[in-house]
Length: 201
Image 1 (cartoon, rainbow, N blue to C red):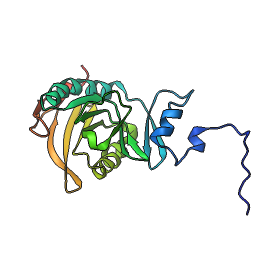
Image 2: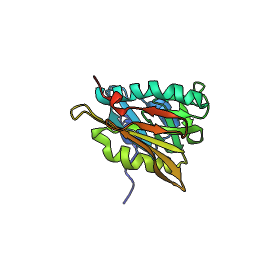
Image 3: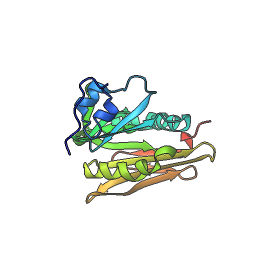
Image 4: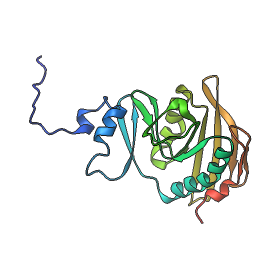
């Protein structure tokens, strides 16, 4: 069977025509998609993954934790950022809710995995598997030393924080805290906080 004829007059749709081909270079050229609502753009093996922005519970938790993490990271000689593009491989990138880098971003759009000490995600109801399974697996494969996960529920007044440390290619528990248990760790830098503070008032 002959291949379908290429129609040079057909409208170009990057979501369709670039499926499986996405790279940071193409993202710089075509994202964000005009007309689409604000979204998080991530990529797995050339396939673009879009997800809506978080609700206020997650945004409050990330912002509040950031105010605690930033001075602790700086004291340890690191650099804290909210929402950066972390490139895991030529056709893989994630946009974690927060990250700690080993060196200043210096205005870069794309941060290579080797410059990342820790990535953090606040679990979203719409992407629980991605936040709990897929992203940690990809970050471990890319050699990122630490992965931090937050899980908050305003309705249930529940807040959990877990820090995972890379050990022999897999993430293993380093520290944990909840609304009834203080989070404490000395690695990768000293940090202690009450996860109950991450809940909206």
